[in-house]
Image 1 (cartoon, rainbow, N blue to C red):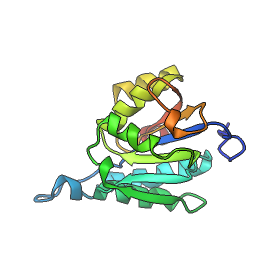
Image 2: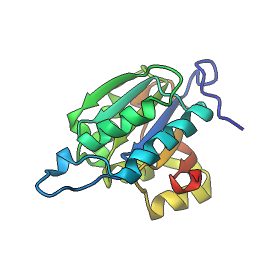
Image 3: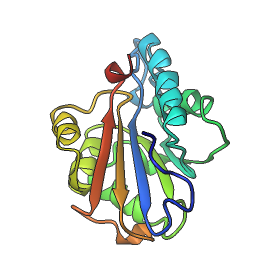
Length: 182
């Protein structure tokens, strides 16, 4: 059963989609910030985009780290979505700890009922674990054990404004990995 994601279904609540960038390569002489996607990542990102489209997990806004691999991940995911998504490339997401990521989310106020944040570990995993207060126990255990590249956590919040989001306030509804899409 697909989640309700239309504006009416999410009225009075917020949905956070946390996507770790796809698998990257590390060519000799390439700085971490400029690492491109590896072949495996170039396959996994469109597969996750297809999943998001099929499950109606369509963001109103995408906040994307300015690292090359996160921008490439978003380009491949976005091509699979049924609608254009407002996008903000945000350099503060790169190497950000969980607290800074939460500040970035809270700064959105009452905009964007469904937010996609594409970033990096360990900040992304730490943020998810900080925010989750309840939800799918198996998904939580999998997320706590490992947050692989191209993995997606879906966390719902019973709030009308991102400023109200805080530690333990979210409901983890699913955690999807590239392996689970095969």
